[in-house]
Image 1: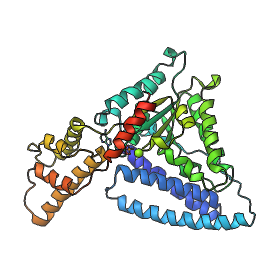
Image 2: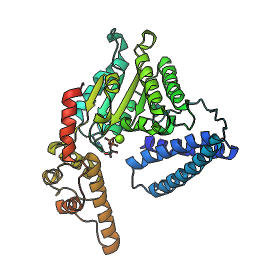
Image 3: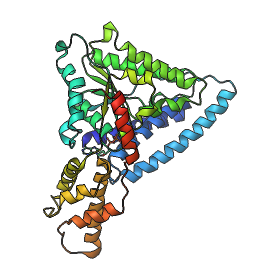
Image 4: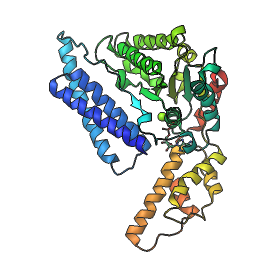
Length: 378
Ligand SMILES: Nc1ncnc2c1ncn2[C@@H]1O[C@H](COP(=O)(O)OP(=O)(O)O)[C@@H](O)[C@H]1O
Ligand SMILES: [Mg+2]
């Protein structure tokens, strides 16, 4: 999965930039780069929590977080003394999925058929045949639903489907200690995206955990409002005549859609529910992941119906982790007890499931359904 390694490449690159800026005494820039590195390492760890390098990256994150804290304290002291903190960085960082082409695609994701269909209608077809849309097409797409059900993954896959450049907006990328800088960063992101799209390459501005984005600025006097208003203004700008044929999209993802206010919700024309898997889909998910073990083990005796039955309220992410846990158990057994690689049983999985709580809270399911009835639009 080369895109994943690209996350690490990019994170490492940011880390180098951070250290360089840190050495030069450009602490504001250093903080931004550290945060960007942290953000990407987190993304990597979310996708690959137990790769051989994952613990190493966790250590790096800790180190960078500590350094950011030190620098922020330092800057706060300087600014209290009236220092000026003009930012020298006007670069917006982009993740270019196209340069490395083997990242996740729609076909690699189990089910989510409704979501894929909605994204084809909203994004892929307009990008492929803009001439069929004299009335324009949607700009803002919100994906909502419980954690671990594929919102981030399907967004990445979408970018790969259309060979888009993906620009992440996260607190890390637009955060600034300096009054007024954060909203300028928002403006920069949109400017960059327009440039890219203006040259004919699709651009996706991706905002993961969009409900949390503006809260980051609530410490700053009026900061939350200003960043938010800038964002809304930029979204509205995309509908302007000169921009309305650009292959440019803003995709937001959230586990807590009810935290978004109506002004914000309205900017997203499409609001798509990324549902938790039902029993049939859970069966497919187990087949998908257990199937990958079949290169090493005999999996022919696993009863997928039983596994699906036993995993109500478990997310695709949970299911992936369950299968990985079984993999670890088998490897351990092989090393500790010796002997041949044995046949996998349904019980191997049920054991792990018993010890692991589902991560979807059934109480929330009703809340998503209600929100979807009220605001859903696909
Ligand atoms: N449809 C799916 N098919 C296969 N694996 C999935 C699917 N959805 C989620 N996963 C697994 O769960 C992990 C977390 O998904 P993610 O997209 O980060 O969820 P969300 O953004 O909704 O919290 C993915 O990295 C992947 O391993
Ligand atoms: Mg996510």
